[in-house]
Image 1 (tube, rainbow, N blue to C red):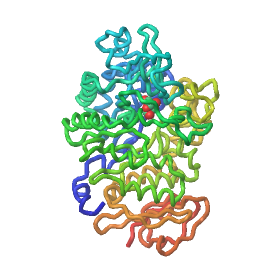
Image 2 (image 1 turned 90 degrees about the vertical axis):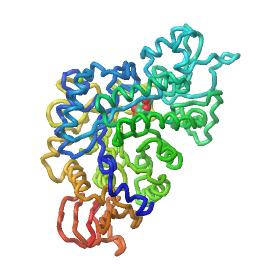
Image 3 (image 1 turned 120 degrees about the horizontal axis):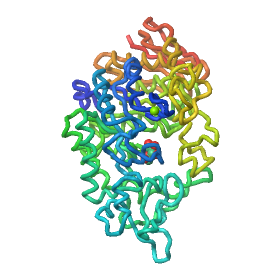
Amino acid sequence: MTQTEFASHQDHPIWWQRGVIYQIYPRSFQDSDGDGIGDLAGIMARLDYLVALGIDAVWISPIFPSPMADFGYDVANYCDIDPRFGTLETFDRLVAEVHRRGVRIILDYVPNHTSDQHPWFRESRASRASAKRDWYIWRSSKPDAAVPCNWLAEFGGSAWQWDDATQQYYYHAFLPQQPDLNWRNPAVRDAMLDVLRFWLDRGVDGFRVDAIHHLFENIELRDNPINPDWREGMSPARRLLRTHTIEQPEVHDAIAAMRRVADSYGPDRLLIGEAYLPIERLVAYYGSDLSGFHLPFNFHLIRTPWNPTAIFKLVESYEAQLPKGGWPNWVLGNHDRPRLASRIGKAQVRVAAMMLLTLRGTPTMYQGDEIGMADVPIPPERVRDPWEINVPGLGLGRDPERTPMQWDASRNAGFSSVEPWLPVAADYVETNVARQAADRRSVLSLYRDLIALRRREPALSIGDYEAVAATEHVLSYERRLDERRIRIILNMSGIAQQLSPQVGAKGRLLLSTLRDREGEDVDIRSLDPDEGVIVKLR
Ligand code: GLC
Ligand code: MG
């Protein structure tokens, strides 16, 4: 991207181009009513923490009425709040309290499937003649009585569920309790677009759109091909390539329709799309002429080996493939993937934070990563994630990254007055918000200072990205805006590193992961183990 193509972003950035997004997994953020499950009043009680952290927007995972087969990603009513979380009235108060603090609020939107308890599905399954039969994907069995085709569900088993009463199968990309909606039916599309309007009318600032690449399937139900790269130990769903079950061309039209609804509420409503895809296929989700998502989630930092050359290449390839005017974004973790600290090791967590907050693109952080929370081992009797229950022992379960937020050293880490729905990490007495807030060398303080620095130095948010170098252990790049050049140098190893003159930097040290020398004039020629620095060049 050239300087001029970005001129408009640099002159008139939209809030989310400069902002930092924080994901709240509401079941595990803060319980206020003593049922061991987080809730909206709990979020409200912690808003000042988020303001102090400096984030610009919260995205809250689903809070709608749900049987919780997939912990809220099975929605039984899109236009209400689950009583475990609160009421519409609490929600309205939350929106007001969030906005009063200058923060935005983004909701999860789950368009691919409903709960099997949603009134639409109950009506659909009532009879083959039901007016809502075609709202879902029903098919008869083949003459030989096998399933309609070979498609597999993400969470294990066939994607076809037999319904005895009406003697047909319905399709579910995830759990049988999550029947897929039929987006080819205009009535479904209208009803689902109305859901966006319902929440936009209540003042929400955008949506994170769930599992978007699953929205359509091949209408002829063609069998998916065998995946030649599948090996024992991988998810059984990956035995087949998803040629006919994801990324069907119709999806872009549906996204553009969602986008038109968001845009009709003004230019600053944000749509984020969730799809784990290689970059060349992910960028299609910006839509033609940017008519799609503002931010198709870029999960590649989660999947790329944690070393300088791999990440250097990743950034280069992402920057090169972004469509003209498309805004980048980066994610280090979420409620579906092992925790950052467990993936790359505790020692590298600070380097990762510095990278996330200095790469070009909107950063999304996951609750707890800012204190370096790690995956929590879940004893068998406490496993809750249906994926782990259906497909055990392969490390697919998501409970370890969904455990309660560690607020302080009191019982249950200050999350709840009772035993929480998932166990609290054993190390919560050492690793918690209260302790780290009081320690300027903590991971939390580093995050807070990185976010504040990003706000102070627009080069870090809207500046251009310039690669400097990647060696075996050191990654270096610059962010540039007008005359300002800020160099980031990251030691991605636990061994001290000498820097070549090309990589070293003279200037003012803006921030170091070691929290020393800040504000001093420095001549950086080496880095300590696991050290990262941000230097404003002279
Ligand atoms: C998305 C969600 C995940 C959920 C799935 C089905 O990937 O992030 O938690 O299980 O969609 O809705
Ligand atoms: Mg509660």
